[in-house]
Length: 178
Image (cartoon, rainbow, N blue to C red):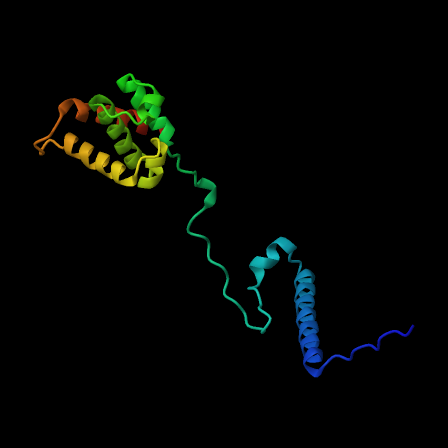
């Protein structure tokens, strides 16, 4: 069995190899010169700006204007937490809140919960609807508009009891964020 003949490099490959070898040699020469001056490796980066492969000197890097060491993740509320808080406030169970029943006190409670979920979680209307037993996004939108109208003192349908309850629930839930 005969071995395959070795391929000869092209002129382009030979030139690229020569450029890479020259670049490596220039880096080694600069490192040797710095070591001869007594510059330690830690100080080397500060002593001379970096050099790119084309041989151009790059400007020194600026200090970053921010630090990720001080960044903390923003805590968000979950829809379930809001549902439980609303159920506790109105004396309902979570199953009653999510159920398909539609008598007035239950519907108002569900609307308040949907309003708070929209205001405090940043979830989409379809996602909130799914969390409330598969309700449509238009149902959630109606609930939000209805509660906004009920808590607006300039509106003719203002309800002080619901406005106070929503304000208290919102304050309680926002306190959990911090």
